[in-house]
Length: 241
Image 1 (tube, helix red, strand yellow):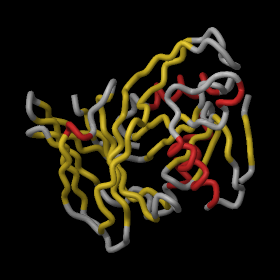
Image 2: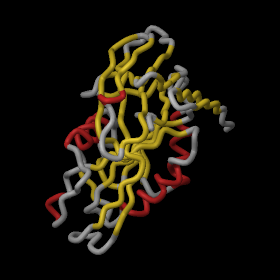
Image 3: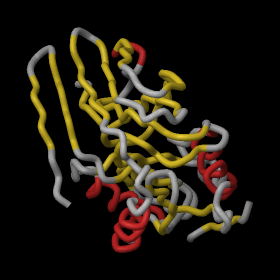
Image 4: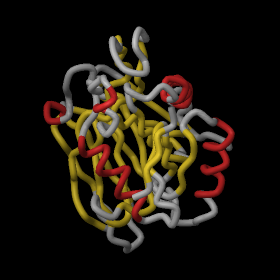
């Protein structure tokens, strides 16, 4: 089921030790997959996101939504804020499309979440906007804190830390995916707003972003607001375990 409603070259350098992890990557895209355990078309997209998550030039995240819960299975990972984010994106596009599995690339273009070629096409299209990921972001973990920094270009932006569960396997006993065990990758568990800013350095204690299954954190510098999200200006991801 595809439910619808209207409404390069990688440069990666990492150093790691018991108390320090630093990653600098030339991120080419942020890939947000809106998915549901109640959607029969979603497992293929969930599997593909797992493959994309292995690409260090991508910040790939699963954002489970809750609007298919009435179909007989309540998504165990769904968050209303994910649904709100997907709807906020749709309101800023002429097509206004909301569906699962839907991928939003760099906050600007969408594609079918199970179509790798379409996703790559949207990545290339989004990068035609010179503002997309124009701000290099550095993320480090040291002394029990996550540190993020970038140099702004004068535009207002919101800075978010997203804690991610690397892999969560769910046995689904009802609904369209009855009898399947599906693994969800880089599942967004919590969002923490660091600032609205034009660039500097922030720290957040790891204890504030850790949780069950959480092993990574993404830092997003995004234009607009959470109610009206704009293009993603910079992004990076780091292991916190």
